[in-house]
Every structure is written in C-alpha cells, then in structure tokens.
Image (cartoon, rainbow, N blue to C red):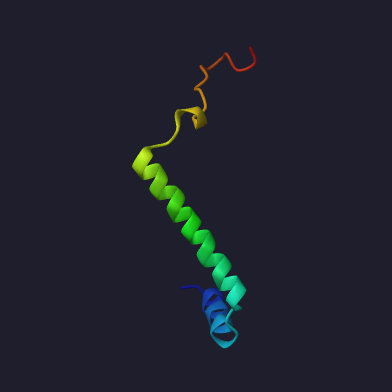
Length: 60
C-alpha cells in the first residue's frame, strides 16, 4: 500500500465524511448494482449497441 493511501485513510479516520456524503456514495453504489442486475437478468438492449463499421468505409 502506498504511503499516500495510508495518509488518506488516517485523515478519514480522524475526520470522517458527513452523513450526506455517506448517503450519496451508498446511493450511487446501489444505483450501479441495480443497473448491473437489470443488465444481467434481461441482457443489454440491442438498440444501445453501435453497429460495427467495416475498415475503409468510415467516411462514406
């Protein structure tokens, strides 16, 4: 582990983040897990997959 990470962990231990910040981080993690679970159950939608272009036909 790098010394910079140890210093950051010590700083957080002495002065932990506020309740709003913790809720925000947990909320973002929950949203990411929900999206990943939705994709795992139902698959990635075809309309979001870009079409593969053949080499040499880029600007035409």
